[in-house]
Image (cartoon, rainbow, N blue to C red):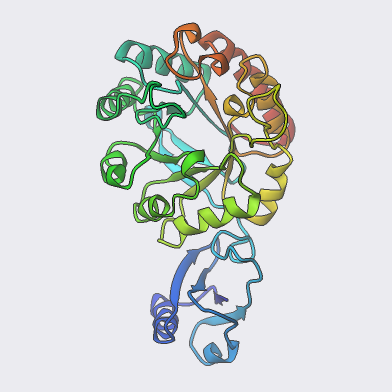
Length: 343
């Protein structure tokens, strides 16, 4: 159930409603909106009689929520979630709400020179956020697993060297959440961990923005339910990432499900990012898929860029060179202008 408060409801009115929900044995979830506060109720095994709340002060309406994902649905919050971060040079980076954001950088942090070279190049080309993996969950235990804590330190150095460019990096273990959150601006939960529910709850207990990647064989409903785990812990700064799903087609690394973007945006208020690098596994296809992602309504891109892809320790075949990335940004801006998005 969703309790809609009146526009003039006071903080005391909201707390009175929350207290009544707790008395009933359920959990109240405050959901800030553009003009008024809503309170989502979770933990109830079945329908709740709206009459229970009829006489409480400040309530405009009590409505049932039909979706199994409650807090991330547009039924609960019709307006888009907007995430704002301090950016390079003191300019805010805004994700969602008609603003388009580009995250770019290497799949894996390999060295100081590699990271700083890439960070400078993608910033100059127009990227807003630096991506880089310090912890790398790999299919093979013998593949490069990342620099871990040293990689996090290098990312922090790159942020300083670029005048405050925000960084996003993956966290793979609940034991590392606090450490990574103390250094990164956005926490990434990778495709392999989309249903690692302990990890989802751990990042939900932080107040860092989280990007949740769709699992390799996950349905849209499973993705939204995974996001619900994070939001139910009080962290509403969540964005979703379509990065390709596993299908029968062997000619592409994954099948980038661009058709999911408008569906997801109808169902949830959370921003949606597209990763065309993992979506195809081939740098030659990345620009076309990136442009298509802008056209179908994504809120941003995550693109892998490496100064020397042939020598990359991870995902070299899908990484753009800085020059190719700069050309991509030119075409992305053109399409964003056409569909009414602001970079």
